[in-house]
Length: 342
Ligand SMILES: [Zn+2]
Ligand SMILES: [Zn+2]
Image 1 (cartoon, helix red, strand yellow):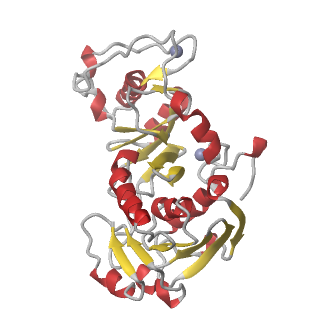
Image 2 (cartoon, rainbow, N blue to C red; image 1 turned 180 degrees about the vertical axis):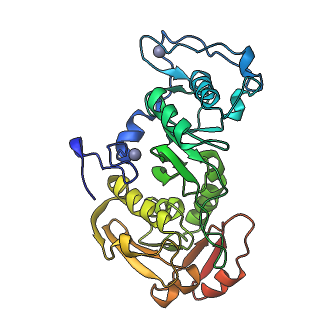
Image 3 (cartoon, rainbow, N blue to C red; image 1 turned 60 degrees about the vertical axis):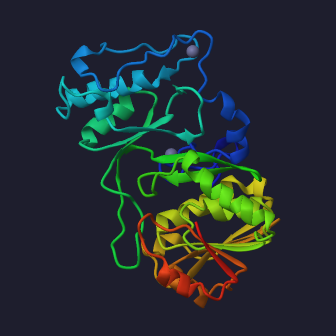
């Protein structure tokens, strides 16, 4: 992994220094979206009111420079109107979904610093997206939504949303009894799951932990690595992470690097050049090995082929795509001592 200035990792999406280590992010997370004492109150705009009834623009705070979410979405809507993609009858909510660049369960509306918001929506184009990233300082990236990204099963082609402008790398802070992890996602290629939605899965892991079952774990459909890396944080001796979707595997490798200190990882070895692999993997290929407090292996390939290379584990987690069947996968994992569908 290349290191940028000040030891920050270079972002694989934009090549700049927007990826930070987990300990850096966690150290300042409580203040990240807080208003300063000079910030104006929340504008509280009605998200369903047409643009013609909305103010021209909302000023940013003169002390801290941050903007409210309404201020940012209003600027975005005005740019979409200028680009001919919206008109005076469109409302703020027509812009799309705002995703904070570092996801964290917030008890208050966020105050946004520079490059801290990614917008995902429909009826957007490259020109408008470029203007949004250039002119609205808080906007980090703009994604055109086409579906739920990722590999659904062995038969359907993978879906990818389109990054129109800027950078789509965002992180979620995932909280559990074992501690917090920072999980980066190339958001145009990985399905959106807010930290709140991952909480029930953390409960499942916590229960397994109390039963002494988080020792030797396979995270069969690992995505960006949330569950498998959380098992490593919980003290597992051996964790195998697997995914058929290459962008997910790339995120896993980044997340091992980002959480390296928290996970007590002392060495990382890359065994394949990812650039030569197909976006949707079939045969299991070991791409990375990491060692230290936990032995970690990362595979790219279809889960049904994983155990032609990897050893069966005591516990196999299958965090499957919503609405897809798991019988084929369960059959492939039958040599693991226990299978848990998450
Ligand atoms: Zn970036
Ligand atoms: Zn302020």
